[in-house]
Length: 232
Image (cartoon, rainbow, N blue to C red; front, side):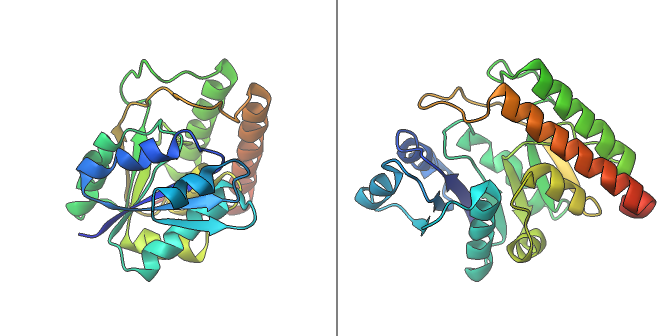
């Protein structure tokens, strides 16, 4: 099966090369989506002859990821994996992510930080609480449970690739798409995150609270407007 790793990149000049090199043992293809970086990320991609797409304007994580799905559809990949460019996602879990899809049982597989205790995962109280609330709302809307609603480390089969290439949210992409494809087979598998070695996360406590609040409001609107339509 043809497997593509989609790596969104925004100002990751210190980590993007290491992230790509971590894929060497996995025998998968990759494409880096440079989302209008303002540092030297594009220069690193060019000088090391990496496979990349450069976006002149910053589209945000949703636009960058959808560009990757469009690439996966164009070149007829069977599985697409989302993997952050900051080096925190561990490439050794790729086989774990794709195995349920290869068995033709699941449509999307989420790498979850909450199925097993992860000593490297650090977050604020408000972020953990927000993720817990999202998980509860998702269960309420769909009748299913996803513990790690905001995980950006996940694999999708060809049917989901085609869906995401056509339509993908620019804001809050992980929880929103988890809801939009809740009628498909979704499973979580345990993963652990690496510590960020370079740079600083752009997710501040205030941004995290704002993110969670907006997604919770979105979910509540869905509950009111669509009722039982999302149940399997």
